[in-house]
Length: 608
Image 1 (tube, rainbow, N blue to C red):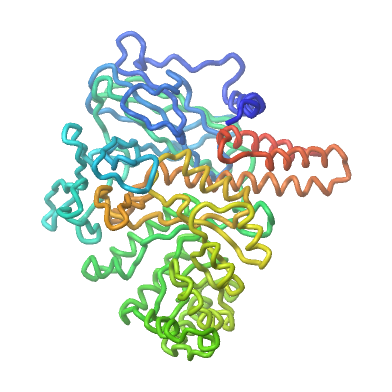
Image 2 (cartoon, helix red, strand yellow):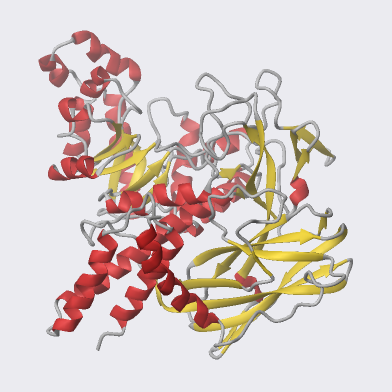
């Protein structure tokens, strides 16, 4: 963040947060929170920091402070604190209470607490998705109700996951084993489950423990609310963490692009959610598999990931999988995910053998005249009719082309893509800049690999093509500040149509398997039998999209004010829009930018 930005933003940040406390008020004295013979101290810390937190007291922490949260109605917002034990303690409990304000009370259930579990990851962890399996670092990542789901051997630098055998016996699976001897885990077959609620835990003297708090602001709340998170040790009161939240007097709209407020900003991801595969793996138990799919989709919705790729029927699909693929689309709709655009719901290319025949023909005339494989064409007709019956005739169906195609394969898809367009469907393709020479004219939505720029988005938009990116970098990097800025304001401000990274889930629990590309685990969530285990970088993705939603609301209000008959209203709108346009998403302080956007939103809402 540049120095002049700090000077500009800091007063704004204070104006918005300090009203949470009355003038002159300080955090209340808390019995047992670090004074005299107290068993612990606590520090309020930034949840989405780029600091890799260790077991030492946080250098950026506010000791004995108030956990302050600012959120719009219905928004999920993250906060965090660190417990610093002055002596060992067993049976520690954290119990959130109701939050009370002038306009009523917010129930304790609005505060969801998790332990931030540190476990060993490869030597490149926090910084890269490529693996250095010879190195091991303790990385804060997992958000757990029961921290004993994962056991860490600090001396041997190994991780173990609690699983259950068929007879109900628990055992510890070695999940940091080398790939050549690792016992691959399938949670559809071997039960893996975190506790439903935060469990009691232990504290070791001078070994800090980070606690993650997610606040869900109710739709009817507004103003300032106060409460506390009680601390109990061995059944006895041991102080509390004071909490103060400010619920803003508005809801956030769906995210829209910076270049056109009528165009959606698509927040999605590649993923491995697959009802048919889950059913095959668990021995045919459809209700069990559906429970897992529901939980994963509900997690996506809570984290603003509204446009995940769907599995589709293609020429390789087993007949018995077809009803399960269709049932998954019903679960997708029931979960409240995005239905105006559906990615990969219908197959976008024939069999590879059919495309390879075209390669051998060699010339463009032959490619265009090549007969279309009727088996694939019939699948497209049948499945597109089903999708439209489920989601409506106006839903945009983006058929996924061959992933990362070579240029010969890209040309070979022309005939099949024309068939899709002739039938009212659209083409979604992983792409690079070479596509502009070989395709582009027949692609509707391109997902470019690596970093894209404003020049890329302007180029594709000239032809009415939507553009996002992936692998900038892939998932795997835990640093929440980095994840937040690369999936939110950066793509937004360069006029991207969203973010579509690889991938939210699909890898095992073992970060040390490596493989041909020597990749780390591509996970924002880790697989569980009935629901996923979430991470701090996944929380950062939600905040990234919320940054775009705040920017969207600011622009909506500013556009309205620009049409005012009052000059001062037009000036206020222009000032807000200019400030938004000047943000450098790669260097700014994202929390302060959020506060700045909130200030402009409140001012624009109050124009008379």
